[in-house]
Length: 215
Image (cartoon, rainbow, N blue to C red; front, side, top):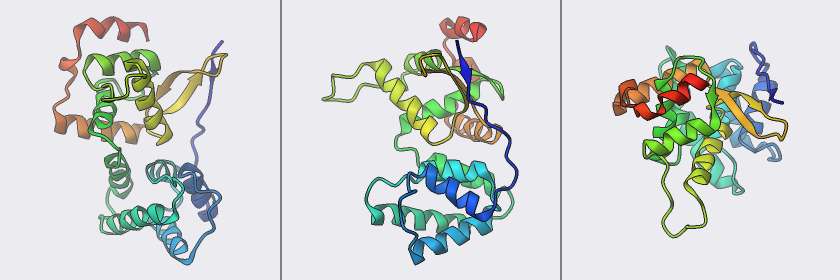
């Protein structure tokens, strides 16, 4: 039996709600807010007016990994970059900036590949990973032969999920993810990257078409 984790459409968040969601997405809940971080908080709130998608995606791209200085430096750089963006399409540009921070080109290819499907498409996790593998986007790490290609594909999927690039997750009765979707704005970014990389629909392996018909 499958269960759906519904993502309710959220209106504008309060300043505190926005910052709380950002910190949660960045794994920074336990950090004390320094004057420097307080300035960054005020800038984010001012620029985005409490848009929850930005809080989730930007926080997911700027995760705290245990060293305060290593978290604040890229956060400060990101805020400086955001401040230089034009107000028009500010949200989309900032989300694109978060995608640009993906740690490898292969991950960006996996993300961009999702643009080959219709907007609002419900991906089947295992079959999406198989498609990534067939396209050569999933590779074994040299010197780490203990992981299979499928396990690496699962790792790629989980990274994208942790950065809120997938949503509307469905789990089976064993709490394993089976399906997911992309937010429309995230899908637009995938299309932009796909166009720049020339990853077009006709390049999908025809042997994978039966997968699409089953989902």
